[in-house]
Image 1: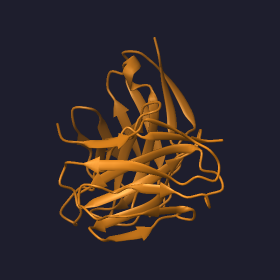
Image 2: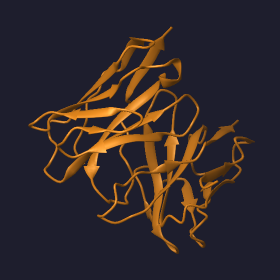
Image 3: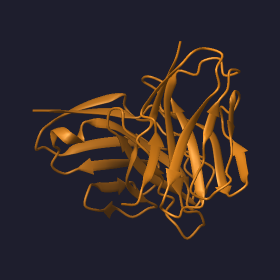
Length: 111
Length: 115
């Protein structure tokens, strides 16, 4: 699986959009970008995934650059409950051999 | 409600004792996983199983053992051979196959403390 690079931590004001970047310059053509988040002392939660098109669901939007070497997760109106560690993961679709988690980005939403 | 249950939430053991962590899912998922998380770190894969009666080692399997006798259950035993067993243990499950998005569902975790 391709390696990802994320900032260690970020702050965002409540009500603002939180933009979390991820670099994955070695991504291959059949690898998807997945985002999970982990609220303190809980299990990670799936957020969104994409291949090359921008994606949106009820939780977030995912913007993938045209060359697919980086992506941005957008939480449009951050709330205090969005404070968590966000993990960007790259892997092929449908694999069943586990996920590779880096240290992620600790997003802190400020009141 | 469908989901993954892990019990207990907190577990304390003396050094040298084996301990088994429970993981049950009612999502009808074929694949199940065990991860370990240390403070400030990401999750690391211990073992995974794609089908009943079959499992594979992950990145840090030494000192751990698993069984998969039923589709719904994937218990993890932390043996006395595991040198640093104190950690947060997370179980997950997923459907498998290239037609699927590979979303993993995680349980609430068990925090194991060995003294």
